[in-house]
Length: 376
Image 1: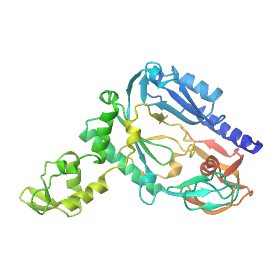
Image 2: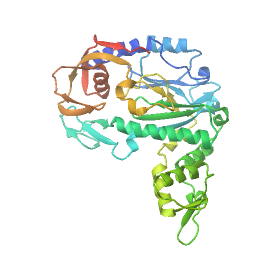
Image 3: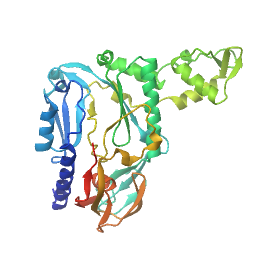
Image 4: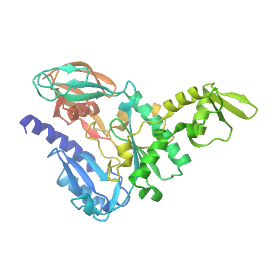
């Protein structure tokens, strides 16, 4: 590790310790039955197969031994969570989890490839810089894209409650680019991979015969509805009616099959099936800091007005920070604000965006005296 990197990590460690010393983390249910994993700031590696009997012991570890850039607990419950092989842990069950990433939406997945060694900035994802070094892949996701993810997270939660009958559900902003949805109902814990796959297929309407749910009738291929629809049929019917694509005769409604399919394609949720099917998936601690962004993994309320939020509302930091850019870039979008960076020229910047750039590897931290932790 270079002196520059050592100084950067030392200051970052001080900030993370300030935050975690306030003991902000939410304790997951049955903590002693879960595997804990840490991506260590000191080692830049994942430390797996940890377990702690209490949050007090977990705090002792992260404040005295290893500083977490990322802090996880397993969605699974184990008889022996600290066993060093998955087979010997003895699986007891798993929470049902879903992942919605905002970069999957059209117009939300742009990437800059930034080459620190050569100064190149390429508006595309490349594997290597001109000098054969590896570039930094800097994702451009506006908060408008996060809002789209929030709308889908709320729709998904409605499906889980209204269609599938789950009640104990939590929505979390991931602290970076999307949302995690956790189902804690006991009935969900014993679902196997295939049963979880079937839930994904229902939620996304992919991998199933849609015409069995929306059977077309007649040569002109109309789909018929009533006022008493439920589940996906109700959801699609309401959207068709809102768009004026329904004709009515008495209490029977009909829509063209082509219009029905178009609405289904728009309403279908884009979730990661691998996350949901994986019964040993790791989940970020609620109120932990996401080491990709410096933002907090935050629980959301179903009725939260996301239009009233911006990236800074999920930041634990206030005040300003001094950083030295490692590259020259004009108008770089940083959490929805454009910032000019000039290599080697120190700038004073708000702590949230300064730490975001430091975690991306684009700047080195000079001073943190102006940074405080918000009330948590």
